[in-house]
Amino acid sequence: MKVATKAYGLIDVDERQKIIFPAGLFGFEPYKEYVLMDAERQPFYWLQSVDEERVAFILIDPFLFRPDYEVNISNEELLDIGLTGPEKALIFSIVTIPPENGPITANLQGPLIINRDTRYGKQAVLSDVRWNTRHDIMGELSAVRRASC
Image 1 (cartoon, rainbow, N blue to C red):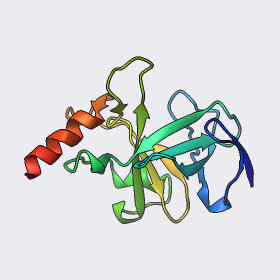
Image 2 (cartoon, rainbow, N blue to C red):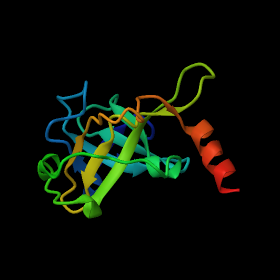
Image 3 (cartoon, rainbow, N blue to C red):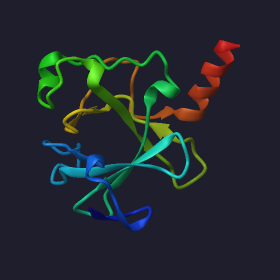
């Protein structure tokens, strides 16, 4: 399928990259269909709206810089996207890159949870006070590396 993307222009995308968010994402509820793509710079990904070229998000696997990260949501909430447990889930955090030289941050309070098999997803809201909307990715990655030395 062809998708107009914010990062790469018009590209061919495999149907298996399509992710459906039945409830949309917070603040972007009208947009339900996205494609998940590798970004040019690892470890980042693009989540691109199929319907609106200007709606795209940079994602990261939060466990890369926060190995202690926990997504505590009920199994009932996971049933919305066909999950009965975490073993088939992909977890991502939305990344914010500030226009100035501030830190690149990740939203650990509102993770994206995707069912690998059905490719349905949802955005959760975690109530754990350890997780907020602006975790400094590089700062926390450095702390993890120092702790492992």
